[in-house]
Image (tube, rainbow, N blue to C red; front, side, top):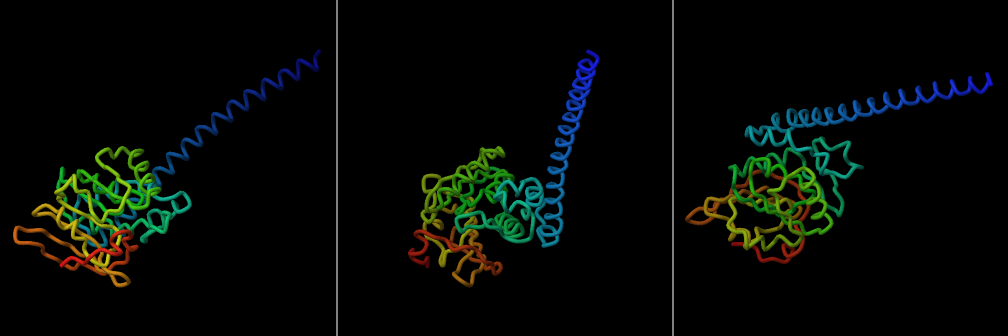
Length: 252
């Protein structure tokens, strides 16, 4: 009897110890999760300070958007560790998410105002669309790779970007039923500027895109009452625009 009673006490003590230890572990994991989330914000701040601001981006709204959007949520888990590095990253299907500086540069060049309507060609994982949405834009974005379109849609929905509409399809013809657009951004490189996109640009609107095959330049187009003004910005390297862009007729 004494032996049984002793065993009972040992069992109760062990249960209490396990309960206390599980509580410590749970609290520890919660603390680690909070630390990890904090460290990701620290990484974003580092990215913005060293790559965006030091790189010459001065629009305070663009800088703030780059600080807020969690880039690592738009990258596959196996690449997440490098989410805030100063380089593009693969997102599957032979596509990439652009270097953070290029995202900020193209966004700043559009000079967006809240409420403006933006067309994006080449959604990718949805990161650029999220940055545009942070500036208060209504974003209509088209991705030719169907699995990526769904991936982007899921990413944006989870983060609450309900002012972004994602369509799977070829973006060469744009989104005619939603024209005109105050701004258009293309995140893949055609070898010419698609005429349908020029036609869907509002007067006063801006179109930014990389143009070229092996040698590419980032180009800004402004539509005026008299026509279109073209400005060459800087050399870049994007994945090629596929679909109809590969056989389309160059714009005059």
